[in-house]
Amino acid sequence: MVRNNATERLFRLRKSIIGMDYRKKGILLVMSNANGWRKPSVFGGAEFNTASIISKIEEIEWYVVLPYQLYSIFVNKFPEQQIHYIPIKTLFLKTNVIKDIFQGLVYTWRCVFIGWKKRNDYDLIYSATTNFSDIFPTKIISLITKKPYIAKYHISIYDEPNPFKIYKNLREEKNSRTDSFIRALLARITIIFLKNAKNVLVVCKYLGYQLESCGVQKDKIILNYNGVDFVMMGKYKDKNLKKRYDLCYIGRIEKNKGLEDLVEVVNGLVLEGKEVTAVLIGDGSFLEALRKMVKNYNLDNLITITGFLGPERFKFLQESRIFVSPTYAKEGFGLTLLEALYFAVPILAYSHPVFMEVFNQYSTITLIDKNKEDLQTNIFNILKKPVANESIDMERYSLIHCFATERDILFRIIDTV
Image (tube, helix red, strand yellow):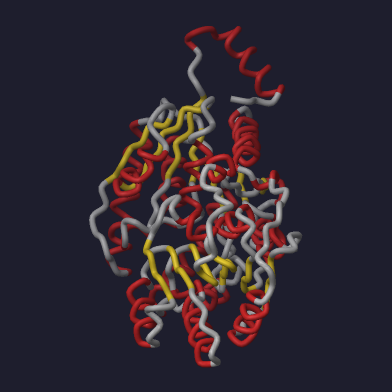
């Protein structure tokens, strides 16, 4: 493993002073994956990216508290070495708001019990996301153990500190009134916890600006852009694959991902006599409604819905002419856009401040305002162009760069504890 010179000198000094009895610095990571309480196979890029990073930081002893269904996925992908998984069996699946509240309290109690039991093994508590189901048990563990905590902010929910604005944002994403009210209230409480955190890690500058506007001290906010494993992805690169699909979507199948717009656009093109094929890859709460919508439009022969896929998705991606992301969710980075860039697939997406910051530098991405007519026009125009095969320098967003930066950040934090 490659270490920078400062980290290497630090390790040598510690070992020379402490000798073989030296205990690795430990971090307790709380990763609840609340989405998975409703559907076990659904987890966002935040969880996967966090697991990818910590699996490579071997100088730290990790104690990861997570739901059992997430453990069953991650233990195969990121085997237990310096990672000690502590799975918690959740009570319900396919839950509603009331069950989520009850389950959240039980889950928090179990996390706190583990945090207290393992208190001599770790030096820092890490909330994998700013979801309340992560940050609340993290905060309670910190209170009873007197150990500092940090959190990572992945999604751009805090456009403004005003809870009514947060409620409006959630309602725009088609959440129910009750669900939106509860989540807006919890999001506002989360801000208080973030103000008291030792540090908050953000995956792009825009998220840092949001936290500052909510009162989090600027010097507490640390930037580390997300990254993907280009080395692993290189194994799946195949220049001989033929283009079988015009459009490809990869991500969670949720209402706010704009997939209704995409299906309606495909239908509109068909009505104009321009048959367009699409493959939609992912899983989520909107999956069955999406399938029903495709069937109602009689587009089964043009739109393929695969469900969740692992690395097999890279084959479908390379077989597509355009990667489409019509999301209007409160995005935090856009890892699937990075994958499309790596495989030289042109991208068409609804504009978002995060996408503007991270991706607007690349000539193969087109960002437009949320508008179905413009989406349809741009799809048609891009499909008329020759197939792209552009080589792009993306080292800044490699997983290697990401975990090296995070490793240094974590050691700087731990050394001040």
